[in-house]
Length: 193
Image (cartoon, rainbow, N blue to C red; front, top):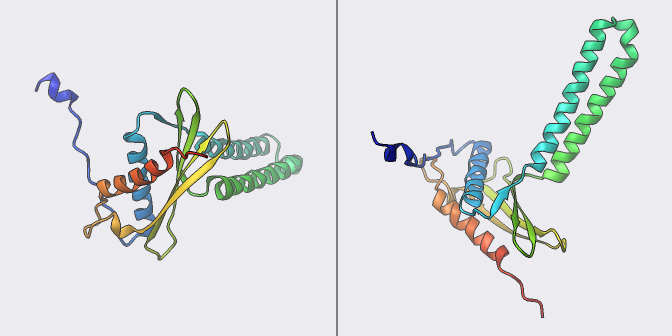
């Protein structure tokens, strides 16, 4: 085997999902959209702020639980009652904040990317929704200009059967066509008169 063969890219693997499992279909389509959005556009750099916020909230909650357990171990129950009460309240407050963050800030967002040009900085977000027992895959691609704060978005509401064949294989080229259509419509500059 030569060194040239070692550097060759492995062939793309076909993603096969159980087409009757709505959650698996949604996640497979989300992965295909993310791969298309970030893989084909080197000017977009993925940003992990939403995931990091969720991770920090979970780490704080686990830290509070570990602290309560350690305090209760060193100071048996009657002495540790106030610390345990504080820990329980803090844990549930952090879980409430995490729920609000997931429900209202993330809203199904699975990809966030930053595009920096000489003139401006844009933040691209991809989110999706697929209701239980429904075949409609709602894909939303939005862009926000950091300097002006203007936000535009495009949505696509198609059946998941438009992106998955009869055998349950995700058709990446059809997903890429839809993502490119949404991206190009948002990337085009609007000329104000």
